[in-house]
Length: 353
Image (cartoon, rainbow, N blue to C red; front, side):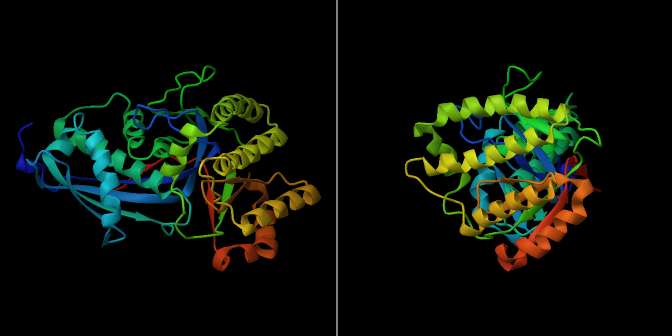
């Protein structure tokens, strides 16, 4: 398209939540960009999010992505290659990327490196901004804006595609999930109040440092893992079983599936070649404390894990007071500097002024 100088200073501004997978995405199909080897289910962390603003600064005729990036007001060259790869993947489809220099300003409301999937929130917000600017600049109207944003968010960070939609979200083809797709996520279930939902998520920060093995490296190691095919089959079954358990208000089954999924994720790391562990001793200590507390109290609290040492505690909002008291009295010694974050779940992204 001809570069219209009137487009300068057009901007888009979005808040996008992070998410935590209940059935884990771990492993990619060979030969395609960001296609999952197995489907997954997640829920957004409503109060833990990225806010990203993208502004058109001037025209670009270089034939390469042109952009600047600030995180919390500071230049972050370490993110440049990831954003450049993302823009190259959507280059042909998005005129706003081809024709303009874009200035990106982003911030998280939680510290980067604390294991709260900042890339999912960040690329989710960036994808929403790009889709919005494409509509503003070209006059194009995406028939399903959220689906389009989810589709391209996937090309920045696989799990980011799930942050675009509210409630329980599924990504990946599944024979029993209508309209499921490897290319974008879909909302599959809006849990009703009173059947264990809404859930709270409290993230216990065991280790705020950078992981020794990145998620990208971890995904690639599944290619040669002798147990990967069995893992993919189990994930497919667990999606069916989790959806049924939620619909039947079977909290015992929900807990069993969610915790088993978390442990399977880390088991796959430990049987990769080379093998590795992202657990820490305090991760295990927290899990054992949760099991002990649940046995004594009969409260429906469960843990899950991302690809790191930190622990997410999920529980119905009804029991927030009891669970926070349990954390404050028994779990804080296992948290780095006593740090934890509390969030509601299920919210959608928000367009900001």
